[in-house]
Length: 187
Image (cartoon, rainbow, N blue to C red; front, side, top):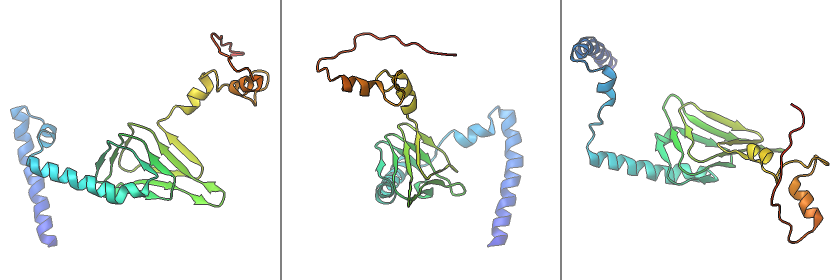
């Protein structure tokens, strides 16, 4: 068996050395030949897609708290999930590889309640390892929104309170903010 593999390897090397110089004279790059066309029959492509969807639904989805709709999963058997509190929002693209697994790990030991949240339209490539003892959130703009929206900003007079807390303390039923100005102190 080993002898057959070695001879096949030498065949590929010789094939590469003979064919690619010829392609140079035809003005076709080797990359075009490799990527240009998927020669599988259409029915086989559809079958592989259905098998991947079944695998994701049966084996991968139960490991997540939430696995969003409309995802694209390539080689999902190389996607590993350890621990709970791992969720991925809608339309993710996860690409597994035999030599570089995707790994999501959250610790749920004692005071450590790990949580991993990945937002919409995220691409996770081979070899990515995300591990959390507290919380990791990818693809969301929570911090930006909190600092730049009026209601979630810290109140100037009492920085421990937010603007929305001060408005609630006023207890005015029909209070509406029609206009505001932002003043930045310091540089």
